[in-house]
Length: 555
Picture 1 (spheres, one colour):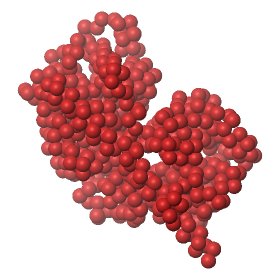
Picture 2: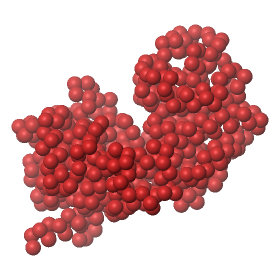
Picture 3: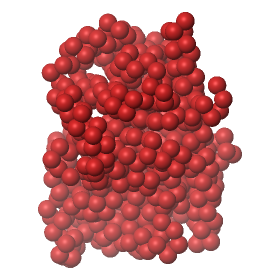
Picture 4: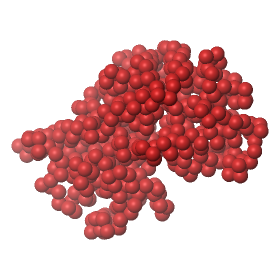
């Protein structure tokens, strides 16, 4: 096929995180949207779950005139959906599907998936049913659209993200064989589980059997749908070389191509706007810290943070706390440091005492009760982060040079304490630290440098490996410090993090400005207009393989 023939006429992409911010895939899709819209204007259609029902989705603008005829027809097929625009740069078309009516059909669906593709749902639990029912609904949406608009003579591509959408890919493979299917795993379910259960993933990788480990870790259903989706789609992709090796070993299928994740510069303010937003962010962070800790914080204090999902070992939260403890005890530390852990947890309520003193600007001369957390948690006494902070002996007393604060809320701008979005707080940091043990790509360090904030990560993160390929990572003055991490060098990693932060603390204003510029330069190499070619190649592979299937079928 010619290069032109390999470009899709229609592109569908479905994920649990379309207009539903729960993890890093939201960032992948919401930032990629602008570039895709430029290449395939209004031919890229995202499909997400209607988790908001009658509530207004925070980043979705409904347009009832969009595909009105199709929506009317789809309703007769039992498909109830909202159509509109995703309120992110590019404003792509979005379909949000109400998948709840299909729950009654899940046993029939699971049988069909077993009968056609060998997907074993027998040991399913937790979020498996809901995810797979949504995946089925997403497949039904594509099928309905395809038939209504008679796309038989068009080149149609459908991309499904993570195991949660695996059944959608398989449904399309069965029902619409002319559609080119892609499946992207951002992290294998078994690999993530091995790491999260404190097992050595990397030194033992070649000895692990995916099916056996899935059984041992009670991950059989998720692993099965992931494995079969990877096997049966026209193009299987993952996000980094480190995860590609994991897929080959645990899913018995090497990706057809690696599709690394990019970012969009238009998410980052510039010039005077950047300066004002940074100043506002620092004021907000310091104000919250002063009210929680009951003592003044120097306006030039070093502000550090880590963030991401609450995966205690995988995200290196344990390493972050240990590194901050080392830094706290270092005689070389001459500046005040506030270390923020911005990791959403099971919050119970906004702290009324902290909220009151912030809103009323009430003078506080002593730390509040539990001066480590901005929100109350359910089962606080069982929280790993709080327990380890207390175990390490942090006090957050005024005499301590380093103080640590856990912000266990989703930073959407409506958390009750900061009332500021994550990006509008990130911009106020002096450095970020993501000492990941398991990180297929690593959006958080990429976001950090995109905002001009130097970052520390590891070579167990896909982003860290990419930075090293670009010749970056030996020194924080390059914008990124990539620390070598293995299954056994935990203490060395914490020491190197401490030394890197101390190095940063000695930088003068001119040096910090130079570091910020290097951050921007590196981030520019990872923008979507550079990385989208990998996706375009993946679409081409899928279209070619779908074409071969159809030729073989007709012979």
